[in-house]
Length: 456
Image 1 (cartoon, rainbow, N blue to C red):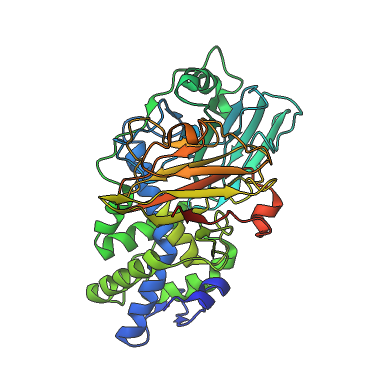
Image 2: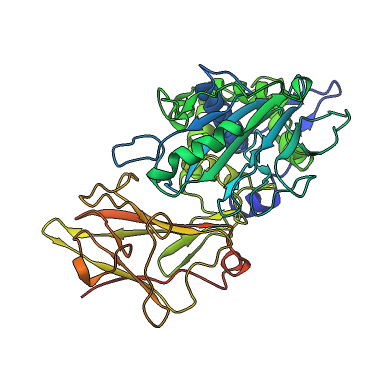
């Protein structure tokens, strides 16, 4: 089993290779099934990324922006626990032919933006943002040269090279939006983003309009991958590893996987279809329940600070991809999450969330609190309030404390405007506290959110 110790230290090598470089199958059926389990965990983020890329680029192709144009509403049925703080500007890059140039225009310093680059294995390799532009120039526009593995050309003046270890790259940009009325302003910024091959730089004229998102996917990519027969999954993993090589520190794991034929450009062999299927099923169960070593539960909140760069913690990498593909680094965004019960239909439970003076979320950008129903969708309510703290400003008490009413019923004049967050009238709900550019106190655990307390 791929346990916490193995996940943290890397998978141990086993099996031998023949003189011609081919792996020699060895061990019992249980041994081979265990190798298949670990190989599935290892390759799951890679295959999931490719399934997502394939679905999102079916109509527009690679190397083009796809812009979000509207904020989600309770009837939206895409990803779960979506945020309302930003509009996405995403692109899938194919760096096999040449590098791509990304240019971010001048943006109001008070408007947060981030343009993270994920490799094919879901690691956030670079994360330029309004807080840390990581650019060659001190003022916008900021221009970046995104290069694939092995590229050795000359970087043009004024560009910051962002080398990527894989040829498949997901650019998952986000730009702060201050409510529905602010969407047109963000759309103007999106129209100024540039993404072109290096051979087409500098651009000639205005950028071509990018297609609007979101893309209506036939089904969530996690479901697409879950339905794949095991042999198809492992073959796709082998094919993808040719253009998207694993990291050098993955060598012990790859030596082990080679004993059943799972190598870059290879094919599963020396293992039965039943053993492959059993391994895949066990892996999916492990992925569904795993929490990372840096995940902690404090005051009812689940807080993770070890996502985005995974090293050899393959199970954390897979479970994070399964729960939320494209997760940010904790230095960019944190997502403390709380799960609660609103009570029975006839007797909804009101809650209070109180921040002591000087103890609101410590951030260099902004924070928000959003409520979700049992299926992870926004909570429909007559007031149309889905998130507070950012788009709906909060009101502090005279002593500097902040008390938020988290309840189904409208508290009326007893609670200042902006301090009420509706939850479902009954049953399960969740809260996500999004913290953009969190300060060190939040990342280290010196600061934690207060408990959500029922009002009796």
